[in-house]
Image 1 (cartoon, rainbow, N blue to C red):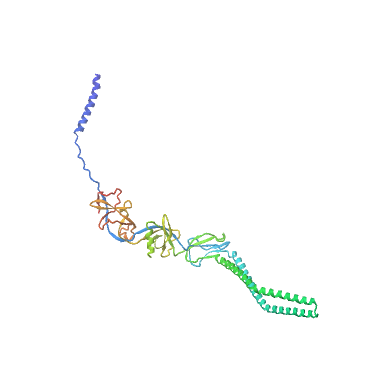
Image 2: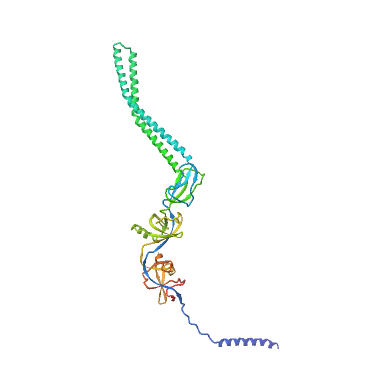
Length: 413
């Protein structure tokens, strides 16, 4: 009885397994599916080769070569400030005024020294004229004194005069000789004294001019039409000599300093040497501004060469220190393709569709195509050049992440 209970479950399990294996062995086999090559649906454009000017984008900063700063001409106090930073100014407009009482005393003192020296020079000239007038009389008196000596000595030999009288006449002659020599020395020294006085007068006049200039410069006015770049003082401030008060720049002549890539330096320098001036455009505050390349820097660095693009006309939207994106048009290039950015792979190749498959072509990227080649789509395009490209080729414009030569594609109309 116990053996039956043990064998019966084993028998049932064996029958179940056997039935399962029989069913599995006799089931119908599904048909084997054929392996098909994947097909990618893509868009293409027909290649059109043309002569187009490449456009290079450069980032630069607005500068003004004529930006100027007004400094305090001396120690003083700010009386008033008439303008604010960013304000437009016109020629002759008063900007900052220092207290004139800090500068007027120096002017008065310097003018007094000039007047004093001018009077001294006039006195010296009068004295010289008097010396000239008295010189003849001094010579005549000397002759009289010499004659008296001769006469008294003759009379002394004849015992008509004493020796003391003769000595007295000799003393008179000596004094007259000294007087004449002094007069002649004064006349001879006149020019030296006059030159010395005139030198002192020139120095005093220079001090006067400097004091008057400081007084005039204590009132800062705009020399041109432009904008206030920075106001560095306020009314009541005490300033030192040479301290900056205000800086401004003209509205005209603004330029953008931008770095030329090392790969394009030779091209732009050659254009300038030929007399050509590449042009550029920039969108600033919704306004399209025109620029002209005028010159390049004298020295380059590892980042490139500085180029200076001058604005063709003044604009209130262009301010010093602002960052501007320039689109620079270069010399036209023949047989180039204006292609969408999506057509470029790995920065150096494109794909042509031939017989339903992709074929890679190496290309040279010349720059942006610019608005002239945007077409009706209005999308930005690249200028590409490749000797293998032919007019009428189908260019892949769908950017496939797995694009390789030989990939099967279907062109979507």
